[in-house]
Amino acid sequence: MDNEQLENEVTVDPSHELDLETVYSSIGAEAEMEALAIQSVLEANGIPTVLEGSSTLPNLPFSVKVPREHIETALQRIREAQAAGPSAAEEAELAGESQQPAN
Image 1 (cartoon, rainbow, N blue to C red):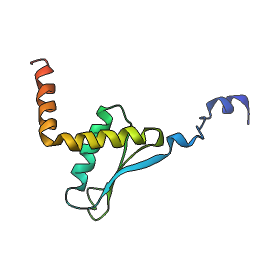
Image 2 (tube, one colour):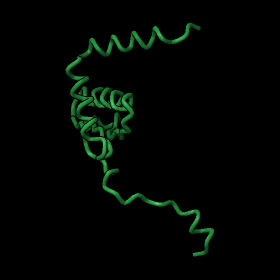
Image 3 (tube, rainbow, N blue to C red):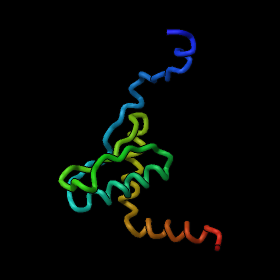
C-alpha cells in the first residue's frame, strides 16, 4: 500500500463505548409508533439512535438502540417521558408551535 492509500483509509474506533445497546424492543400493532416516539425523545435530548424494524413486516420486532456510552441517560430520558405521559408531549408540541415564526 502506498501513502495515498493509507491516508484515504478510515480509522476505526475499537472502543466498546460505541457498541449499540437496546433500550426498547417490542412486537405488535403499536411497536413501530412507540419505537418512533422513543427515538424522537432520545434524539431531542442529543442521544444518537438506531431504529430497527420493518413496517412491511409487522411480525418482526421494532427496537431502538443507542451507543453504550449513552445507555444510562437514554433509559432515564425514557422513564421521564413515560412518567410525564401524553399530556406533556402535547404541551411540548404546542410550545414548539408557538415559538415558530408565522408565515
